[in-house]
Image (cartoon, chains in turn brown, purple):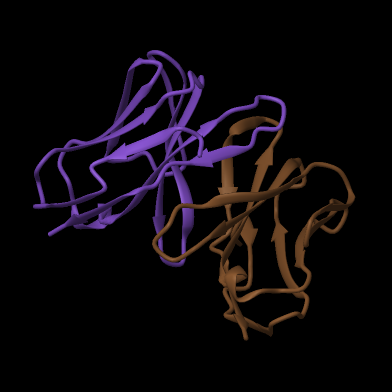
Length: 112
Length: 113
């Protein structure tokens, strides 16, 4: 079992819809969670970090964390074609906060 | 922009040759990381550094060595490149030891033929 799992997609949503991206992780002592966006041929760009159970909102993005279910998600409201990218989930554990583990990413396509 | 540059940005080399990739940062960050990214595997940590001359292994360190003689430079060396090391290599820094957020450089695409 991979440590951080994401559906590879592609996930396709129409412009203006809500895109929902999901991530599960296997290590119960994970404490820090991150979402990165990566455009084709570019480097990952941090868009959200979340550390506590519940929701965290930043503009059109909402990260949701449920540590009991070992589940973190990213919602993108009012999706735009410019949101089309691969979204990477990343997880840090408290015992090695230099060893960030990444999921393989979910490719999102927003259709005009 | 976290003030990170990587060089070269693209490189093609032959099996068995040594290769060194350079990561340079301008903002005096203590922690630096090298990752590789391959289809289906996502990003995997190769080595990291927590200060000048202080480095440690990551998940996929075999076949790689690193050096950090100055705060601003973190070098990744493939002593004898193999085709399995064909990948995109990213350098990253942590700017904040409270949030542990990592920020990435532009990447180096390495092809070993």
